[in-house]
Length: 291
Image (spheres, rainbow, N blue to C red):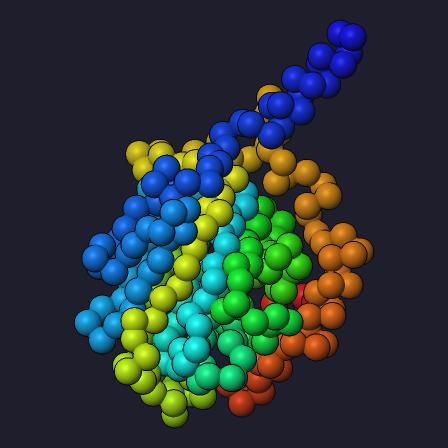
């Protein structure tokens, strides 16, 4: 019995240390702009875009390592020119950022999902894919898992992208800056749909993206604490262990690897790693990534 209590205590410590988690918007987030374009309907939050304004929200805290998720139902009908974004980002010119950008399209055409990774202020790591469902008909869960070994983008728990830690190859990896969690909807008809050829049709406004199921299971970082101290605070040690540092999360398991290969084979539309026009020399991380 004593041994069981010790194991239980270890497990609780593993799960609970330094973690913020909730499903209520107001506990985790606040409006960041255009409060009048943000509305509640029961447990659903709606962001609206019209020809006056878009809207956005931001987490109240910043985090280092863990997993963030939300359920989104994207703009129905003709959404050409619109972008709905869900992302994590740190501050400053040398910021890190992990992006989901949902690129609207004309009625009947599929939504495209663009992901991007910024490290030390440098992005240009776009991938685009089509989804295996219509994201405007129901809610689906979009998640970012971040630890010291990898960043994983997930759709309904299926990995669609992995950015691995390749510091041993001399490639910087984002693990030294706390990041906020953000979402917004805005007009980007200069590039979002068919490279900007299809413009936003404002007769279909307002364009509405719906959200529910807000979850942040991550290490909360006080603004007053130095980055190096936050990194130490949010990393496992002999005194504490965090679930995101467990060896099983250092890389995808076999099933997840097969899922990612399936996504890439059947739904990938664009990958910066294979764009020789933009990158005559293959980016170094593309040479070493297994996926």
